[in-house]
Length: 287
Image (cartoon, rainbow, N blue to C red; front, side, top):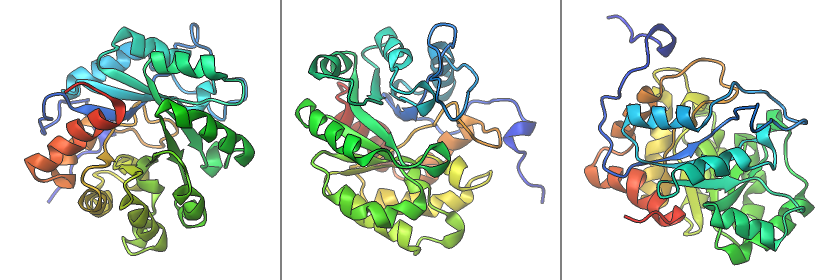
């Protein structure tokens, strides 16, 4: 029996899975173009440009109608590329920003008016590690009145140590990429069990994306983790492509990632919640 070809050996294709109407890619990025929206001077990586037109072309190929554009660290607190993309398609795009103490109430309102519904903080070691926690606390206090949430990008080893802090957050929180758990350690590993405990909370949302970050093609090892999260938190799980996959060592075809949804959410009801209803509720899309 021959194995399936790796994405690097095949051209990009349309997925076998047909997403429900109004499905949302709840985790994707736009990068640049650098000539218009320069990258941050202190960035940890420099991506290839992936402007809004490339994102729209991807979604047309996949059959996705909505998107949440997550500000990535390479653009720092300059959210203009993300805001420009949302303004291009304001009814179907929302955003998650990166902010700091320089953002006053007027600046936060401008982000909200531009379609932003949350802020993101990175704790991942290779991207610079944990933020200044005093700054983190001040930003969280500032966004409480906005009706926003905070997106947490964590390494698996940090889930248990940070769980107490996360539980005390006064705003809803979203865990990126299934907490970047190590699939080789199995679903009983303390990090994943701690993530499941968080996922049971009504203020916790988890993105069951990032299969290409925690497993190798064809990503079978990620399925038990994503499936467990959907079962524990059917109304607060989200899915996304992570396009254009910054810092990923091997190429990936997003069609392969979308096809995983058929296994992550086997029933039509589960797929409707994961791809349509849940992101619509969190990000204020009109159904």
